[in-house]
Image (cartoon, rainbow, N blue to C red):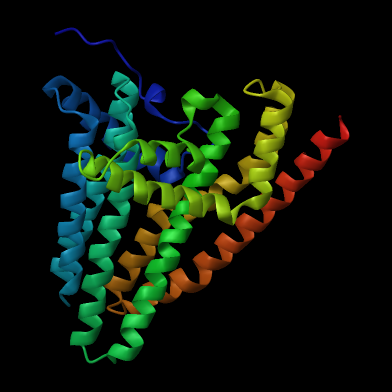
Length: 305
């Protein structure tokens, strides 16, 4: 069977949002996986599901206070992340993008880190840590992990929305998701309704954290509809692009490096402290700056009326 040649560059989302480690390590490996899986007829969603299980297996190995076993866990997690690159690259190669794929892709990393958090928590307890310190530490870190990853994903997709238009972004709207949720019934569409319920909550949380951005988007919709001027899109990109490095820090690679360092030092508590301090400071700064320039753009649009 003949396949249309797709270059490595064509499988990337955009130069604005790609991270250095991804560009030079995970994306090339993912591209090779995507070429192989396309020839084998494997779907992007199947790759995502395989990556979920591989990543969970890697996370479980972090329970053991044995560096060799931990290194195997690290390698499994890296393998899983190469699949996480491959599924999106294959979807862009074949045009097989789906809403389910988008949800699965977002769930993938959360399940990896759920396994990691539980394993590290049990490890700390086994080593003699106090449960009334360990469990709250892990639960609070887990909550902020979800918030950090959620907002990083949202800001990247908002940037892509203004850079490439709706076809190049995966931004969703809670109102439309609510309509979709209401169209299902628990009796006939249990799985679809359950997925829609949780994804609607996920999207709603992103919107509630960004009132300035939501006001700007509503103002743009009222004035321009879906035809936002190129001049505005360029101005938004200029303000948004410097924040993309922070969205990357709040994603997989930086936190994985912190995790690996804490494992090599045999001080796994360092990872949770890093997440609660450094990464939260970055989250607060990122949201603050983004909200500020969105309010500025809203004011400028209103002044033009």
